[in-house]
Length: 419
Ligand code: HGY
Ligand code: MN
Ligand code: MN
Image (cartoon, rainbow, N blue to C red):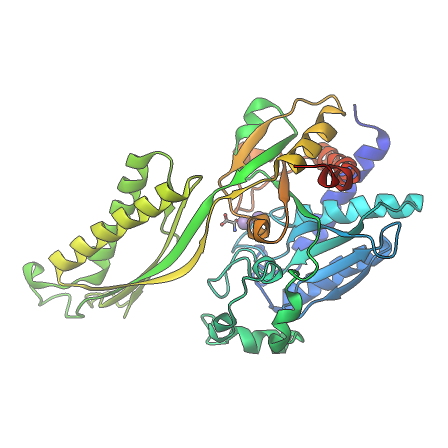
């Protein structure tokens, strides 16, 4: 049963998300990419909320914003919570942001009571989870887990700006990236609350759910080179049309994923050059995103896709190069942390639903560093996400935040207990 305070909390969280949605590069659409001017503006707004909640807040060397709320003891171990503040293009306003705002609200509740936990809390707003600007993803969370690749500093965005240059322009320090690595003193756990971005909780009438595992994913760019020519004079039978080849490959990707059932595969971006109406396309690049809850299945599907694309390219006289962008294995959520979340849900008289995450999250970078778990909150509108019609009810935002706050108190004890 929600109290008036709960309702007020939910309304406040949605109002904060609305305010943060104003920091966009493509108004009226919401697009906020890593290290852009809106990243800084939104980060400064979040830093203000962190400070009001009794935290000190600062950016690390890679532009992640970190808020710190000391524990009951000066050397208390760190429990990390948070999510990402970047977005996809034309995004919804709760993807990532809800996880940050709900984490800040948990700390604000402790601060209001002058309470301290046996752990220090660190709230992190990761700067790059989506990978929109540089094609890489999980840059901040991977760096914390010791998986940052300094070669990424040379990767350039579509305007030719390198990650190094973007970090310097942001006021961050690219050469200090090792300082983001937490392996020397890892947090005891990482907890992320996040909208489900799917229909399960909505269909079952549940406000929250406990994530069991995060699907593994592989991303690549496929570059095709054919032969440009005059659209009016080159006979159909002697063309090396890179766009026609790409079209056949895109349908092959869909066919292979459909046939396998436990794989999803998406071509989200396709560029054809020279892009003139009366010229046969010579150069085409398209993105590939392949995911599965099982890593062996995902790898087999990617191999089948590679073979199908190679055969199409050979038959059409097209050169093909696949540029790997990113790979993350499926990440299991720690059973003890799942139990903490389940207990906090049950204590509120709510049914406990465990479910996997088809979407990737910062939490998937953490198993290499510390135990992690995720709390999902129901989205409305059929669960649509990565879309401006993403919906979160104030009541659900409040319930999820209360569950997260209750679970935090239980985590310290749970992790000291034998696994
Ligand atoms: O792509 C994903 O699954 C996440 O939204 N970055
Ligand atoms: Mn997303
Ligand atoms: Mn997200």
